[in-house]
Length: 466
Ligand code: 5AD
Ligand code: SF4
Image 1 (cartoon, rainbow, N blue to C red):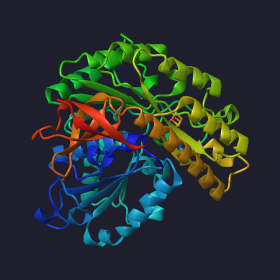
Image 2: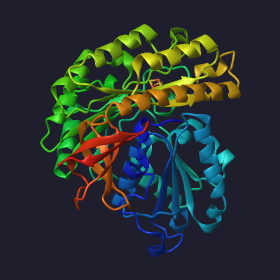
Image 3: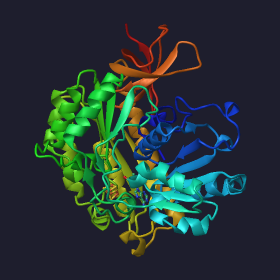
């Protein structure tokens, strides 16, 4: 799988030991009141983990960096593809014995929502199963366990409880994730999200803006608005702020220097979003616009609600903007019935769009989804062959695209310091990773100009331009 710009998400999300985690050697093993939280999956899950951590920390729990040191072991899970779901069960298997030591093991997130109480059958050492809409209830659920309940669940999907909590504990000191829309009302035939995250619910624009102001006061300069279909945002309040207006309003909050948003659905991608990016440079020049396939026939079978031509019209609209906008995408190869010529249409779409980066996946049949029952499954080896071809083509495209940026200067938000002396890393507005040299001592969290000196398919190399 290739990653948009090879982002070091580890350092930006919950995958690296987050700030404020108590090192293992300082905690009594199995200490009650301590939790270990591992996150699988997408940015929405990373952000959900920040909410879970916040809820528990506010109740006096301490976060620790190993399951051994924790009284409560939590897995925030992903079920988008089978492999991700399997990983959760194998991880759970590793902690089977721990239950005997009095530890509580809990499954959160999409696998929890999807499998529900069946998890207790498959992994009887699990005693807590809780989906994303019920995280506010976690302390209550844990208290029930401490009071003697054997098994507890929180599995509602259509509550408004999923949005930010006052306690959300963010892992990155500069970039704040903010959920503005939860769930999904689309019905892509391969996708579990409508089942695991429930129907679409948008958060009130006033509440979003209030929170952005608070985030800015806390020192965050970049806000990333999140939603499975973020641009389907429908303000539930009388002002009915449109998504593009919301982007502009967020960008207008004093202290905010960058606004990102992900993931956009092509059908709801309107011209006013492009215009907002054109007029307000604080709105990042990057759009993640999953296409999934370059074949109209496959798109129909996927129930994606647009044709190849309609998608390309959206691309033309974005490419026509007054300032260049990076475009990234998601692609699924080997959807049931995808013929060789249909796959080649995806390759030709890559040639035509010249994406700045993409995530690519082999189709994975998922429970409850309409495509599960579709005939003409593509053999695994064939899916692998198509994936490799696709990634090779994209590598060529990225090599050329990044190569064309050599000599240019970009503003970079510095977010990493290398162990190597004078080496730093950060992101451009278009979300490219830049590794660069600077003799400055304190750059983390600052915005600086970097001149690109060379490029790889996944990142840029540069030097601090003073
Ligand atoms: N099989 C493979 N990839 C999938 N995705 C979603 N469901 C599946 C599935 N069943 C991919 C889509 C989506 C991304 C988040 O995951 O490309 O955009
Ligand atoms: Fe899944 Fe489609 Fe909704 Fe995206 S838009 S979350 S792929 S159902």
